[in-house]
Amino acid sequence: MNTLSATWPLVVIAQSSDSRAEAAATARELDVPLLINAEPEQLSEPTFALVYDDHGLALHHTGRKVPGPVQVDFLGGAVDHRRRFGGGKGQMIAKAVGLKPHVFPHVLDLTAGLGRDAFVLASLGCRVQLWERSPVVYRLLADGLARARRGAEQSGDGDLMEILGRMSLQLGDGASYLASLAEGDPVRPDVIYLDPMFPERQKSADVKKEMRAFHTLVGADADADDLLAPALAKARYRVVVKRPRKAPDLAGRAPGHRIEGKSSRFDVYALHKLPERLNDE
Image 1 (cartoon, rainbow, N blue to C red):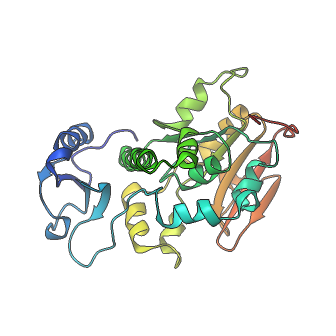
Image 2 (cartoon, rainbow, N blue to C red):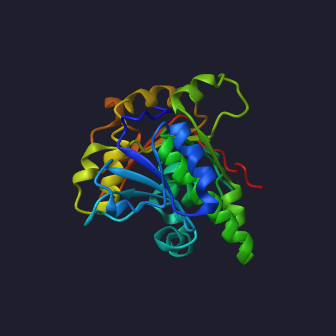
């Protein structure tokens, strides 16, 4: 779904004068109310608020004693720690997409979400094209990327600038994009990556409360099964699907092999063998 309606449980709040124009534009595009200088904890409805302030854009649950806000942050926290100390090419996701010396697949991430996996792949040298169809999630991710670029420029962090330069974000439906790619299209991706929202994650003990709220707003990807067949038709070398460890196979189709962790797994559908050198620039 690419548009919202006023029936969605969402309001946009501008808490700084610098953000009012952008907040107003977002409210118009999403067709939801705009509030100025309101506090999410003082609202009883709607359920969620997209808040623009001096720290960027964040999704808040309204009311008191609620989960914390959701914000995309590539400059610090768990994402930055993983970049610095996450295990490099030994990580499960790196093995799943086929990363190895001299092999850096171009990855099409059709379910970008908050961009964490895409950022990991970009930090390891892959060029990643991100597609996100939820306009709320897209805005959170776009804001996080913009803040990261500004932060990297201000601090002179050339490594982070290179990582962000390998990430491109689009708002739209991934299935429609796949349909637009011809069989011999030179922009066909080496690897297509799918991480559809899965309902059971909301009940998992290791999912933070704020992420459960996020999942409530975004909802499950009920049509996720429909992505596998076109992805297999358009990827050059493989399709990788991230799933909760005990979840059923996407579209009921077993992968060639799996890479399993404690709570999640990567299902790998290999189409052709990766070459010995790929995008080794």
